[in-house]
Length: 489
Image (cartoon, rainbow, N blue to C red; front, side, top):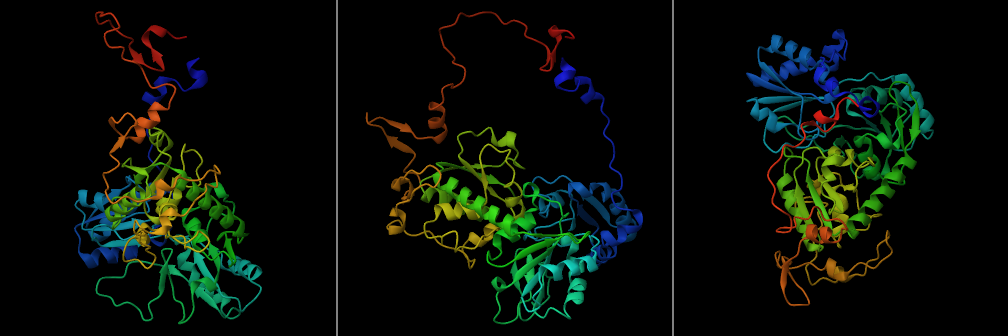
């Protein structure tokens, strides 16, 4: 019976952990991981200890890459392979624990500024791109040679965009090539005119032009991806791009194209649903999804003040990477908000395995700030830093006496009128700690206690003084899958 529903208990004890083999052919390591550029980066800094950060899918190459770099540079290399949060963020804390003076980040990166200054080199990898097939697909998707189009790509294909543009520019006159928004070296001057920086990319727009005028052609993906496993980088682009402009994607291996308009519409519809869920929520769980990105403490304080002003209770939860079993321990929480980097905040949204929805900070801002523009007019911001003071997108909360707090609001999910008192901010942050009852006795108001009192089963009853006193007896021995007194049945 044991082997029918699960593997034998001895299998977990006797299993041997194997070592991952090389994922990249040995002859291609220099090209894929740009080892010559990394060697120059380490030698220019003269760092005796350097941290190498790899995502999970590239750990098979970490050992040979570290050995090659140690042999060439003479510096000690430390491999960071188990980040507490997303692997796209620079693990500054891990590098400090290893005593490293610099860090080399391999794989996809969100390019968020780290919380502490540290020299960082980014290596996205160089995925092969079939330029002729991609150029043919571009011409099929954009028959008008005068239409403005931006070339976008996943980070591993960014190296091929200029070559693709060279094949297209004799015919297409208004073609814009984006590039990753890598941090500028210290002491370097900003280019003039300074390019627009958005979505983790730089766009060299001409004076008087705006990004909303351009369509998009994205090079990346596998060509067979569905909405369930959509890449967070592509999700960020689809949500933030102008809805009236065309957006198509192209597989760099086969040249197969997809019109992403339908996908973008589903993502925007889901965003509207999440905003409504946040407006209906009484208890909000703020998930700490990063400790290494700049201004995360300021953003957490902003979200707590935002929920307090909207009359909601909030809990701050530091759980590492969110998983359904972790979040299931908080059934009284109506919605969760993941405070993470732009890619980390979108990585968990398509998943339907969580009991409660997980929102981004931008969606909570749209739900709780009555001065925020409507969803059709407000830009979709994926980085929490855009919500903070000093950003051009920052919208301050209206004063308590503003009429915006008294605007009637109807839930699009339940169809009920939301209570106006829930939207009235309070001048005293602690005035909701005690709530008067009709009997004029004071009790502590807790969302968790209210949720527990509404449940039909509230746990084991102690029955103090109602049970006889007995001596301690020996209990069952073993593990839950097979106790010693159960035999082999």
